[in-house]
Length: 294
Ligand SMILES: *Cc1c(COP(=O)(O)O)cnc(C)c1O
Ligand code: SF4
Image 1 (cartoon, helix red, strand yellow):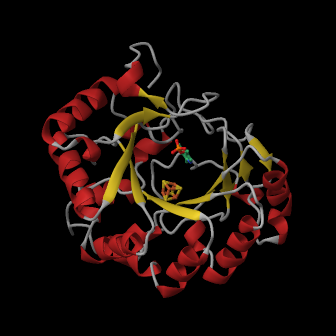
Image 2 (cartoon, protein in one colour):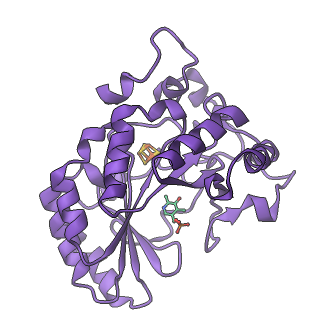
């Protein structure tokens, strides 16, 4: 599934188009590759209530929607059991109860699927429930919708985002500068102009953004619209995605090159998610492991 707005940014007739590569199913996905599995991040084990993932201290992930607006072929939740994600607020009660019961939590991350596929009325009601939990101070929304369907950033969305007592942040997902067309840039700017900081997470992908020119252009285009390049993720070893892999050594060299070309705030942290770790592993600090399966 790919929205028309996103398709319009793909160059017709170019099988190597970096946006097409992100969404086009390939035969290579069927290959079984050692080290790649259905749940490399151990999210199933970290599920505290239906839809609630507790992997990190002080923040919890609420998987608020079972679908996305686009199916990214490298998605780390490709094999996630979305049938277990609650549909509707009533089904979210156990997750909300768990959030209420743990005063060490101060942030909720709405994730998915993509939480912004839900109607604004549902989101506003969910946010009202989260606001009623006194120890929560921040709401983070992980979404690709402002990128793939920029018109989703409308008055209704900005209404509940601006209206909440919670400090809101939006984390989007852009991998290539061609994704940032005029309407996408306008949507992201609109979030920022309404007082919502916007951060970007990209995934380092073979054949999409694994060269310094593309990554530098992406980071520059982001900071030009006040979006901070937050993370550059090493690919999670999810089965069916091995053809996108870039070695950590190459990734580190690319980020070093970005550091030479860009202001410090425009250089993302190069990270990997490792099952059981309390935070992402910063590969720039910890280096790469020759023997790792990736
Ligand atoms: C890393 C990650 C988080 C947590 O983000 P931090 O910014 O490290 O707190 C939440 N959701 C997903 C899917 C992540 O990969
Ligand atoms: S938008 Fe994010 S969660 Fe949805 S398919 Fe793409 S990578 Fe996966």
